Image (tube, helix red, strand yellow):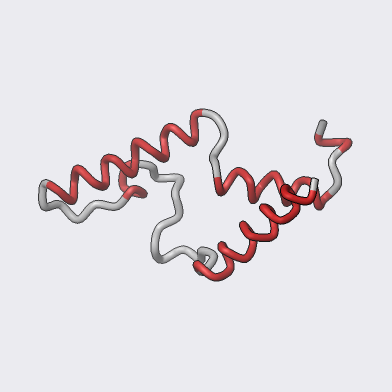
Length: 82
């Protein structure tokens, strides 16, 4: 399948995975966020990345909300056009 994908299709797939994670990773992300909420409720200042070390931490470079929104918007526009 990867041999038949264009770079454009691969990028779209990556953006779609950011919006809605595929497989076990999506479940792990949900559980990490629940852990963050429970920890906050108990007074601890833990983040989802403390429960899921593969998540980017605040000191890592992440897309800004505007960059993320733009990428997701372009992806959704492409999906709507198909």
